[in-house]
Image (cartoon, rainbow, N blue to C red; front, side, top):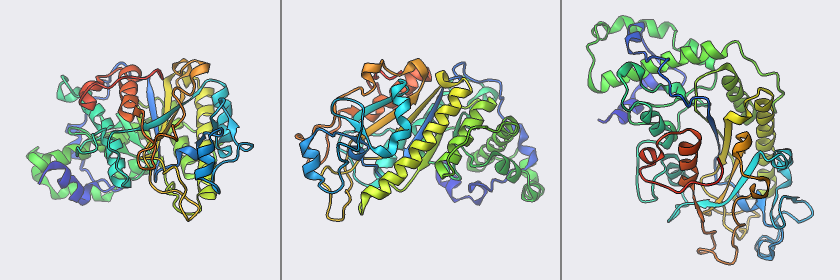
Length: 412
């Protein structure tokens, strides 16, 4: 059994109920050995289900768009116009001021070669930064954490809280070969759960481990748990006295982005935060469902960016939004859209890191006359965005993390 299977099968590592005896404090990692670039932060917002990019960033002058979507297309008079031929879904109105202030960047036609239309497989590809015919067990953020371990003694390696997922489970993107990120929905709750009665019982039942006599998979398990408990203590210790005064929408995404903002303002040494919102698989009656979700998304992102700006951290924080794929160009018979391929990615913040005002939409609108069996063709490999964030924003070795060199983009 490999280490990953061992961890997945162990009841000790279920989210929110981590068990760890006090004797494993010897495994704790030195919190002082952090990379110098810890000030820069990436916040990833995942739109799960396959968001329809054409009804998000709308080609309102394209006759083909309206011909292929007679009942679900966004009418020109409703579109929030950004350029001569592109505009935003009206549900994204809260984001318009960010665009006008140069704090929003749109990248069209983002995808990868030989796209997969399965939710699970395509999300795995985005999480691992793999080719479509390649299967990896580590995520791109997890490998970023692994990279912090290279060439350092054991007590100064990377730590889980360098990458935090605001959720009760950890996605594949956050899992490395040597170290995983930390899933934490509520820092106080996680801290308390790592110090309950079960911890004492486990400690009392394992005298051999108290003498450090664990190796292999079991040793790895205890080490991972020790790192998690240590990180939970550190995160809660930093965050417990910080509470944002900004009003956030009372939605799941709003609450999670508020948590991210509070952690950033607390001074937690985290480089990557990860949050998600689901429900974008709009096969049936798409307009109402997508607009409701896009409004929740826009309100939460606007509140977060306003909060970060008020805290004086805009120049340090870059938020990226993606979905595992877009939707087909032609609407289906159920007033919705089916699984497609390329879509758009949106970036916010970074202050002067975003392109000049004339380049906030950095590439051409989707070409609706040149399709691949009814789907959009990608023109930007999503791994070029990852490479840019890693190399130019987080100042780390993107080639070592992604496995090969990808061109970077003018977004940082």
